[in-house]
Length: 337
Image: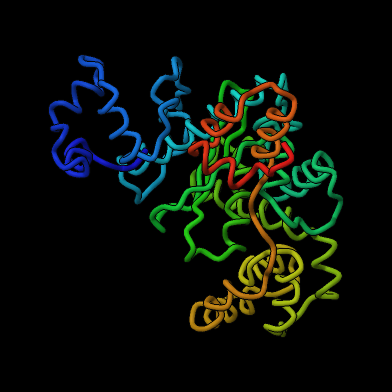
């Protein structure tokens, strides 16, 4: 989870535990004493409770789509961190007797071509109860509909991945690196939702990406809205009007133009000219303008509810949040508890 080799960890411990000793602990050949545990907790940013859990949640590598240009070590780190996040979420929901059922039937929408995407998006918007409104917070919206969304700061070669656990739990992971524009993160989250919703298993990777891009773009910016903004087929599109649409719907300038091309509001030639301008000067504008947010407070809200209802102790809540008791109290609990 920390991306360390055994030798890296030994070095961080100043050799107080050798690589060989750590290997014996990791393999179960030897049990750590209390001093060793405190050292490991400090260096790995874990609480003591973490090392006393009996049945860790396991994500099998085969359940995630293969991620290109990302080392196996980093893929394993992402999957293990995701598993830890899921484990804490599911444990808390079980303690509160919450049955987390998603409104989506996973991979239920059979796609034979781009024309089928609109029907799938219409159905998903109905299930999410958002009509044609802009989506202010994709992550919170999905979390409230029992899709687990986990963000991680990792190499820029990684954008996102998704899986379904036991055909019951939809999981989305996306890169929260500060150099990635927020509009791109939103698009990635909805691309991964497409992988959960659409049945596209018979297609090549390039075609699957095209379907998922179309799904994400249409979900962020419905056909009727874009047609209304453009007012018909165009030969000229101004950057300012694209920015106004972007700022309202949280969708990138390039994604808006790709949507316009899909709806035949602009020509292939217009799109090519725009992309030349985009790559030369407009791409750098993507980090500015849109002022939304992508985060969910659902987990901490459930934690505080569980404390208030005496279902769990404050100590247990801090462990589930992976924080020290003092830090948890200072951040989340006021003097009136």
